[in-house]
Image 1 (cartoon, rainbow, N blue to C red):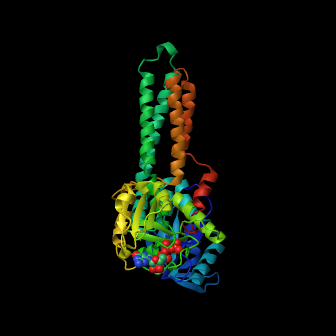
Image 2 (cartoon, helix red, strand yellow):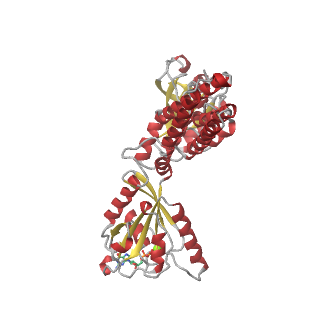
Image 3 (tube, rainbow, N blue to C red):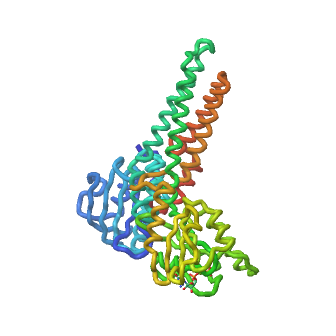
Amino acid sequence: MSSFDDTIAAIATAPGEGGVAIVRVSGPDALRIADEVFRSAAPKPSERATHTIVHGHVDDADGNELDDVVLLIMRAPQSYTAEDVIEIQGHGGNVAAKRILRRVLDAGARAAEPGEFTKRAFINGRIDLVQAEAVLDLVHAGSERAAAAAVEQLEGKLSRSFNELYDFLVSIAADVEATLDFPDDELPATALPELLQRLNTADERIGQLLSTWDEGHILREGALVVISGKPNVGKSTMLNALLGRDRAIVSQVPGTTRDTIEEKYVLEGIPLRLVDTAGLRETECEVEQEGVRRARAHIQKSDLHLYLIDASKALDDDDRDHLAAMKSEKCVVVLNKVDLGQVVRSEQLKDATVVRTSLLTGGGVDEVRRAVIGKLTSGISLSAVPHASISERHRRLLVEARGGIREALSLIRDEAGNVVLAADRIRDSLENLGMITGKVYHDELLASIFSRFCVGK
Ligand SMILES: Nc1nc2c(ncn2[C@@H]2O[C@H](COP(=O)(O)OP(=O)(O)OP(=O)(O)O)[C@@H](O)[C@H]2O)c(=O)[nH]1
Ligand SMILES: [Mg+2]
């Protein structure tokens, strides 16, 4: 049963010119509105079965035709929102769709807010919050891999993991409460050790879910791959070579690139945010100083660091300092300009992953691509096949829940009498876990999720 008594409507297709434009209407009045605005051979929309498609036209209030359309009827609960839904598919283009929408609003619908259809699907119990978020991930997916992971999440795979964890913790909470009913001297000797063990298991399961964050973050936001190095080593040439187009200015003048230049790039299904940066050096120039500051900030938060060296010149202290500061699992060292001779030897680079290139002619670019994929799939534990993985919101709540479980553990372990407090902590954990899938929610939580959707979704 729907929890709403008003009917919402919006254009569901992207603005601009296209083959069709869809006006979506959901709520108790959807079919009445269809009867009012839509003309075709009998029977009326409200007398038709669910999941039928009817050809006809939308008329204005005076009976003048606004557009030739196809009407889709999806009755509750077999619809996106679990309410009565109609979709009017008109000719593409902004004006025609807006005229249909206005007609539908005049007939009694209210203009939908961003994400309101999906929000209704959630509140009406058709999907949980994790699935609702998957809808957004799918819309935003920048690569095949990201889309596949979002579909898995939409189907409920991730929700199941969260629900199992939640149910497990509910059973622990029940057992904790049960021990409270025993007078201290009658509590079975095994009761507390068993509780501790199960709390540890809950902690481990949370750890397993948290370990999927890297993958989720990369698929949702793209792996941040930062190209850095001293001036003039070929960083901008590298950006252009990877993208396969002339994006950044290349010149023999050291200090050419000042600002960071970021471009999206999909490599074997993995979305990347490739960033070219200013060459790292001490300089008097204020603009360049800011460029170097930005470069360092990007290196700090990068998922992967491509560090370029001019192989034809001896390593200096600056290079050695930069190399020493890098984590080898997050870094690929590129020895560029090998066409000019190779003075830098691989042994000087310790355990780093090293690729030799001559970017002027494109030599070695494929090896760089392979090294990037290799690092992203091993060092950052990106799985071979895409998996639904947790988002930043889930991560924060899981960390909170784990904190509660760990406090409960130490309360029971260290002060055997303190089970009452432990029970409180476990309830807090349950509340945090509940907010992930939406077993527990409040208005701000929903607003923060659904406001990121587009109108009509
Ligand atoms: N011989 C040779 N020259 C190269 C190679 N790669 C780049 N260059 C040249 O090196 C010069 C500097 O290249 P850029 O890509 O602008 O270098 P950068 O690291 O972005 O430099 P900044 O932006 O100043 O920090 C240009 O003249 C390039 O054509 C290479 O493999 N071999
Ligand atoms: Mg440059």
